[in-house]
Length: 176
Image 1 (cartoon, rainbow, N blue to C red):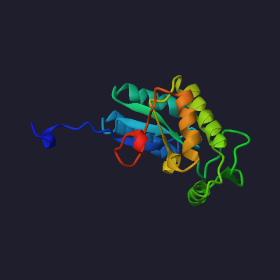
Image 2 (cartoon, helix red, strand yellow):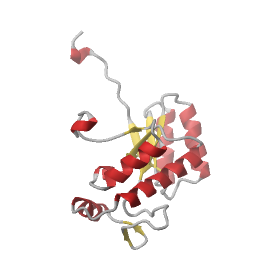
Image 3 (cartoon, rainbow, N blue to C red):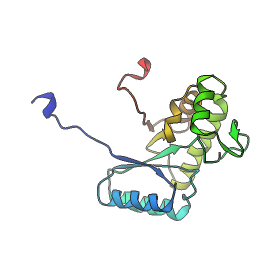
Image 4 (tube, rainbow, N blue to C red):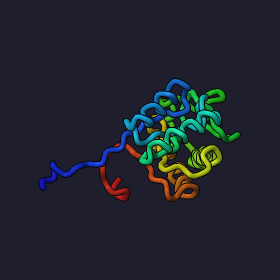
């Protein structure tokens, strides 16, 4: 059999569960119809109350291949879970472009990000009763310099069995 003929396993993941009730309903509907086999949850989203978590768990039970992960959120217009998180823009995380600039210029403290990621992992575990199947980042900010360091440390410590979903090239971790 040629390499082209080998079947590939594809995971279709919808991010941003918790951003709004409408997005949540759409994701659950797609999971129940077998169109998605993963979703990532924003624990700082405005629509992630207990009823939304229970509804997602019920939908996932109907689709045994459904993975539920944490969509670590570290950019505006969302607010951190940790009290002393910095840098902030008002009382929210920094907007995407400002955060990227600060990371590239090495003006971020990885420890603040480590603590915030740990807090979001703890919130996920409390809501779902378990660690996430995978962890990724809203707007891929987990790939930014210094943010990445805190992100990786927190995931390795709190959810060592979770896989980290990452965009980009398919290279071994040491080569990235």
